[in-house]
Image (cartoon, rainbow, N blue to C red; front, side, top):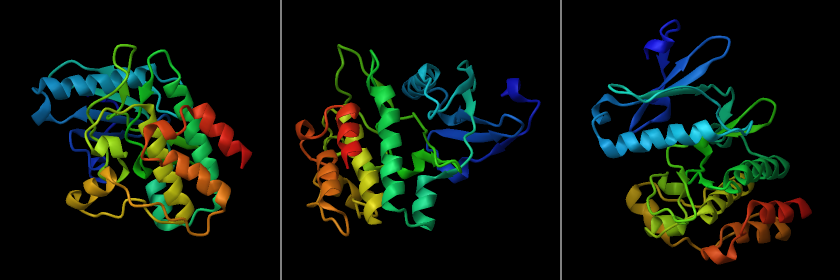
Length: 261
């Protein structure tokens, strides 16, 4: 990271459990996060390609609630890229330490769908595919930011389905967990998982180990709603339908229904 040598990077990898990359915080007036491919993977062509794909996707982002890329160096021996540090706490931390109100949960869901609208409605849609509490930063201004595009896919007219997933097991859609092709509808399912968790206080997939999580993700148990009014139940049921064709077909459709509630 020679280009950033004027500021000492702080290794924050242990806090984010990156399996393929190391993360560094570079402090300063405009703090940065630097993401480096781990040295043991720098000769793996597939992983280098995936790392470059993430950088390319970040470079194309221009929404104020997604990371803004600052610097890219994809040359060997140690490819890295840097993006703005977003100050706040993750939704994961927020859910552990607090009980969210209905208003907060719906507002976060609305913001998330608005971000996804920008990603999905491009000429070449970007599917995040790893929407989970750890990948949402909640600022003191109550604005969310969707981060970590390491699992994201950019589709084109010749490739309308993705066929690999590397996201968190507890937040996989059924089609991902079953190994089938997936698309923007899988992002909607993951939004539904988050909304369900925020509004009920319970994670939809209650498994602990991978052996427990994957079967529950592939074949979810029937939905149970506690203390949620029926209009919101219908909205969540549509997001969380195991049938892709019965989910909302666009962010605009989902936001239209949400704004009626």
